[in-house]
Image 1 (tube, rainbow, N blue to C red):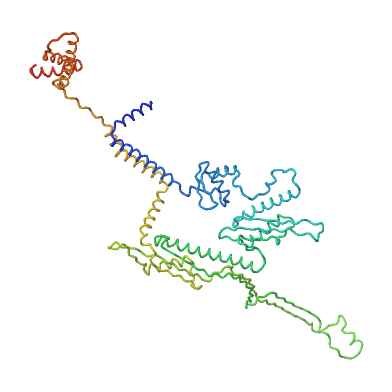
Image 2 (image 1 turned 180 degrees about the vertical axis):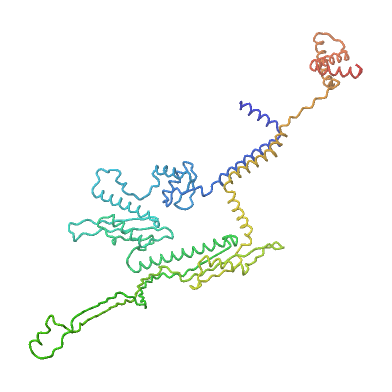
Length: 559
């Protein structure tokens, strides 16, 4: 395809147009380009939802963040900085970018560890090696402490005194830790104790009590004095109370928002009275019903002769007693004994009860709800408060949401007031809710709809503007045929001028030749006219033939 010829044709066509047509064509082209550019830019910018971005790095220092942003700008990578120290990039590029940026040695954290010994330094003294080891140890401890969730950054300083040859003069090492906590975060006593043991275990001869910890505000942490313990306990109690109240408030707002028309039409405040005292009780309970612990029974049985009573005639026979073989009529004696011992025990129950650490004493909730709005006949918006039935239903919902207990003395108050600018923005909020529903249902196919709308707009513009305009502009104007003149027009003025010139020339030639004769003007005119007609006939042969043919037809129409 010869683009040069095509370009020349376009230029030639453009040059044939008048100024108005040129302005219309240029304006139409600019309008089409502007519409396409706007739709493309709008589509590309609106097709970048926040959920398509993920965190590349967070908790960055300003120096590291500036270097990373410079790298992203250099490689034309889109990014978002939602807050200080956080950089977000497209989700599908996070893993690759982390590897690429790490290959550049970024982020360049100021914390160094045992990588100080990756390069050998020849000629270093023992003191320099000891200082380098101390820096590496501090850096590794800082990295370890930074891994705790509540800690944003940490700084560790270790003081190792010079060893003495005398045992009695040796001084144990000490360490200090500065911790910068994340917003609304605290360290529990167990975490503080764990940091102390962590630092003490990494340094020889360092005891946990010689490790001192302070936060970014200079408050000591983990001290055994009563004031420090009370302050730490008070912070924990306040954060627990605040989180509990905020959770209940969010529960109320989320429950009532669909009913009253949005979160901006309900306000809830909850106060929770919590008992943080630790109560431990021990009780012994005796059962009045006796229980048999043991029982013992003893039985004794004896059989014997009854002894003979002393008496009779003194002598040998009386003293010897009965002789064997002789009949004895004495009565046999029997002895029976039975003894039973029963031991009873009193039933005892011992209870060791420890009540919960945080016990709710009372909950009070205040809820303010916006009312209804109606448009009057005069066009003004009228406020209508909620009815008593509606307020009662909302109150029951709030009570069930917060776990209302009348025995504790809980109270819930629900009132209806007109919110500032609520009537003006009611239509806007309804429109916003409609748009949210539309985006919720049409969200997955929204990009396709955008491209479809763009195609429809371009098609309508092409059919209604470009096609009619191009047909009108490209219309070939057929030149009207010139009417055939039946007579050859002869310019009399031109013939007169020619005649005068020829006459002057002829007189001049005759004077030079010495010939003087009278010039016949009629003959000269005839010669000039004949010469002119001959020239016209030679130049317009076809037209002269048609003229003659038409003359013949007019005079002899039957031929």
